[in-house]
Image 1 (cartoon, rainbow, N blue to C red):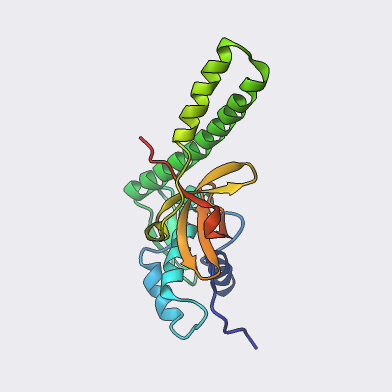
Image 2 (cartoon, rainbow, N blue to C red):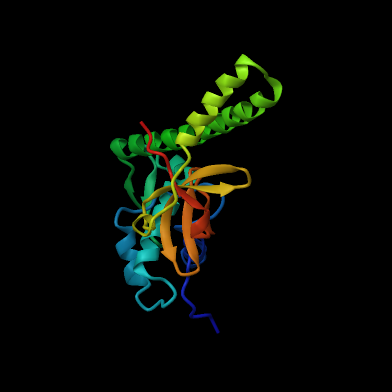
Length: 209
C-alpha cells in the first residue's frame, strides 16, 4: 500500500509530480514549458491525494519553474504542455524574454557569490603575510567585513520568501526560504538546489544595492 504520510519538502513533491505526470514534469534532460494555469489543474487532479498540501504544491511549482533547466526551456517558438503532455499555446516573446532575464540574473548572482568568496579568502590570508602598515589596512578591512555579518533571524523573519544565508562548510550561501516546517526550514539556493536546514544555521541576508 502507498504511504499516506504528508510530503514535507518541495523535493519530494517534485519527484511525485515527475512520477505521476511524466509527460509534463521531469527531473533530468530538457524541461517542458508548463501550461499557464497548471496549478489549478494539479489542485483538481490531486484533490484526493492526502500527501500533497496546496501550499507545498504551490511552492514546489515555484521551485521547479525557477530552476535554470526550466527557465532555459521557455523560449519563443516552443510550446507549453498540459499534465498529459499535450501541446498547447506557444511561448510568447514577452514570456521568453522574461525567462531569459531571470536566468541571466540568477547566473549573475552565483558568479557574484563566487567572486565574493574568493575575495574573502584573499582578505583572510593578507594578515598572515603582511606586517607593519599593511596590517592597519587589513584591520580596517576586518572591521568592514564585520559590519556585513548577517543578523540572526527573528520569528517574524522565519517565513516564505525571506532572503537568508545558510552556512555550507566555511562559506555562507545565499538562499530563499520556501517553507517553514516543524522538522526544519526548507530553502532554495541561487543554484536552484533545495534543502532542509536547521533554523539556527540561517542568517538574514544583507540588503543589496
